[in-house]
Length: 471
Ligand SMILES: Nc1ncnc2c1ncn2[C@@H]1O[C@H](COP(=O)(O)OP(=O)(O)OP(=O)(O)O)[C@@H](O)[C@H]1O
Ligand SMILES: Nc1ccn([C@H]2C[C@H](O)[C@@H](COP(=O)(O)O)O2)c(=O)n1
Image 1: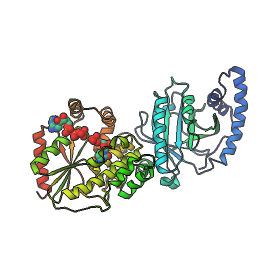
Image 2: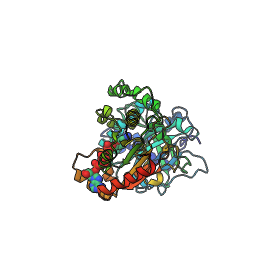
Image 3: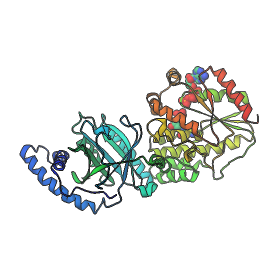
Image 4: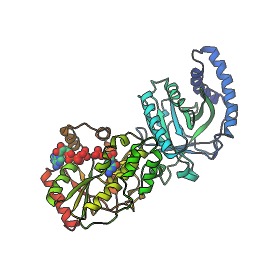
């Protein structure tokens, strides 16, 4: 399927063009009104169509891309679409696309693939700016890709749904995007008279100019989710080298990255030591610190955490970076922690507060939207332990009800992190994190219901340790 453009516009086409084009004219010529605007629109539409033909053989002369939008209030599953004029193609109607059912416009913003760290940082800052400039709009994650070359062609971006009460959304959006002259593709989506959906491509060179348009087609959900491919290429690291590459790439702009890299041990311990290594995992305020401290004193064990103390001073810096850099920091933290664990396990059992499973579960839950049915299937690669990372003997996952966990967060009274606030506000995110933990393999998590009093939770943990570890 090739991207196609309208060559001889029907009356309806002209109307759609006019309604969308009007916005651009208003942008380009502030103060323009009435007949003058109509005349301008007419000439503009003609030249826009000529441009469309030119565009068809230039920047858009590529195999048709598929757009995927993360699950949202209108759609519990990601939805997929493309653009074409194939004669038998099933065009999308606002019924298929409920966000346009009431009219109005939607927008996609795609960031062209470039250097990994730069592109991820651009994605992050653009996302933040869009949220600031369009506070009432729904800003969803979008990826676009060519089905023939999914990982290689994958580009990230946003799908923006302004409220009907925000007629200047496009103007505000363009104002943000004009600051990024290259590598950003803006498309708008509107309903046509026959209930078809039109995609209009905009050029943002000094002003907003519509350059091409095509009908939107429905695409079936692919067997392998591009969102999962996107995780593997952008925020999950299954080897130390992979994560170090990212911090090396960003070390010229984030000097702390050099400090983190300097803490990495050249020799990677995998199964050194004699005493068992027990990891305690769970959502915030499920009682990990409380239990790890009790286990430490009961087992006369060493207590370690990931990220380890030697790099935790830079944690807030990396937390504020793109997902790529943030998760590279946590991934490396696990490897630096592993060296400490291996050393400590030569002399005593080791209890670890969070390890690889946290890194993986939070990343998967953050990158995949919607309900737990959108998570990668059980036994998927993403749930496997990295081969070059020290493997614990036992991983215990603490679970408590949402109400109890939130009660504990409030009772604890410490300052809540952004993520804790999100976890508190977003029950679906909490469920995705917990379910991702439960799907981890080799080693899998053994679950303890941590709702009962602390002494009961401790006894259960000790019983599991006795059963599974040589203590
Ligand atoms: N079994 C329990 N019953 C009741 N309260 C508990 C229990 N375990 C821990 N708490 C209380 O819940 C709060 C959170 O516990 P804790 O700090 O151990 O959780 P955490 O999982 O380490 O949190 P975070 O990951 O955010 O650091 C604390 O105030 C703690 O005293
Ligand atoms: N090994 C680790 C430890 C922590 N994280 C991330 C996961 C969450 O984003 C956050 C939770 O940590 P807390 O606030 O409870 O200290 O840190 C990780 O990715 N890997």
